[in-house]
Image 1 (cartoon, helix red, strand yellow):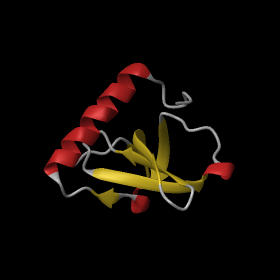
Image 2 (cartoon, one colour):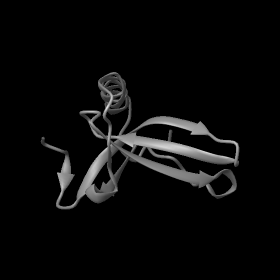
Image 3 (cartoon, one colour):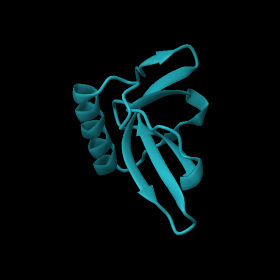
Length: 90
């Protein structure tokens, strides 16, 4: 599998954001294939600018096992890449 990467870092794109009952914002960034995801939980008071993409260590990625979810993430990555530069605030 070819990941868009620079050495140990992988470019991932924002595919989902949500909230939980502990007042945390959950951001999910996926690889272009949708096969891997990076999740970040941030307190709403501490949230900085959310960008369209970010580079993360490949060791921080989790596998996405569900084919439907992989497809949804890959579609959302395509949409984000078409509309935004990686550093665009979203």
